[in-house]
Image (cartoon, rainbow, N blue to C red):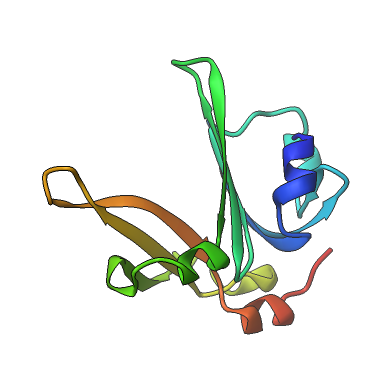
Length: 144
């Protein structure tokens, strides 16, 4: 994908990627600047619309915007959340759809850490979110 991944993505974690005709949710290992996961060879050269690489403390998100003909590269960390107002962080545990959960080292739940802020009009708005999974789930998974 890019040196952005090599410099920012967790060395091991999960990839959640949306391609035009498929969804990938697999454990991965970063080799150089390429996430290697089950079935990655078939997708080599394909450009995901959105890609999340994450572990329990860091998420790297890449969004390929066709309309703007550019891409957004975002890094979100647990460390950033430590300096935020705890009343503006909401954590939810989300069940993974059964067809993707449990097998192949994939977790049955994900944590979504929602980051809120107040707008100029004093309305509460979602500023960003980070996908995470428990460290215990990462340790249990089987990688390639």
